[in-house]
Amino acid sequence: MSVAVIGGGSWGTALAIHAARSGAPVRLWAREREVVEGIRTRRRSPWYLTDIDVPPAVEPTLDQAEALAGATVVIVAVPSEFVGASLKALPSIPADVPLVSATKGLDPERHLRMSELIAERFPEARVAVLSGPTFAREVALGRPTAAVIASRDDTLAALLQRRLGTREFRLYANRDGTGAELGGALKNGMAIATGIADGLGLGENARAALITRGLAEMTRLAVALGAVSGTLAGLAGMGDLVLTCTGSLSRNRQLGMALAKGESAASVERETRMIAEGARTVTSALALARRYSVSMPICHEVGAVLFEGKAPAEALASLLERPVKREDR
Image 1 (spheres, rainbow, N blue to C red):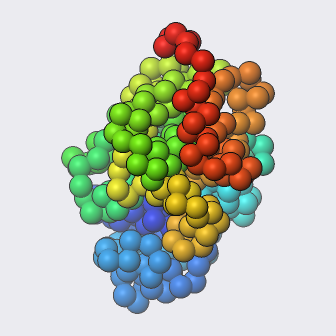
Image 2: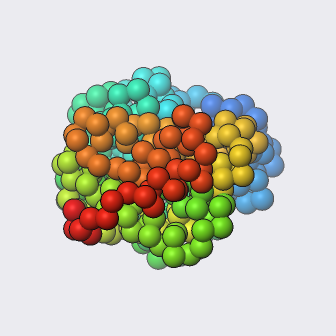
């Protein structure tokens, strides 16, 4: 197996380290010259996971054609807002080479899933989705992780389980790529909501309520878009939601906490270099909710804080003042 990873951010770097640790030669494409040179000369990225060594089997490059040459698996791990442009720049890929979407987000312009963008660019490609509760740092450190590899093609899913899975990186196969992608994307907005609640000191009861009702919102929208509800109850839904809403490494939760203190999303992103996908995902989620007539009150209030200047405390008050209803609706 030879792996090409498209995207030299924290998640792409972690996946490259993981693949190299499992014995595969890896080419890692990054658009930043500093990242490529840092890995080549010091075996560490200067911007992402800066204290973790990148194995010699990972060859960084600025050339996408070089990254893809001879690859038997291609992993796309670019932030969602750049996936469309990155795919357009990629040279042709043989139809028998699996393309794995590892990006958790939605296209900010057309609100498409990442696998839909891949299918547009490479109509004959064998596409799978990698999703689940996966903090990049812990994957890079080789800590135990379970995730989902989703594809309608059972043979492809089984192949990728064998090629990308290890004892510490356990992959479960699933046919519902739609649910896996939407779970990985939509949980980001809910993590911002729980971060706001934590930042306001509302307590653990409030956090549990937001996570649970957030999952209900995510499931309603995902099912409206063709997902299987059970997928949202698994690793790519509830698993990723719990991790992102409670984990200390969650960028989206940190963004919510910063918003509760009066900071802006733009200032937080400038300070960290790492993109919190949630802000962009909220825009797409709200657009899709309107299109499919799905109620998403938590997402709506997060959007009001992010884009309309609503005070975080007022947004949480709006949720508390909503009329009570049956839980199963």
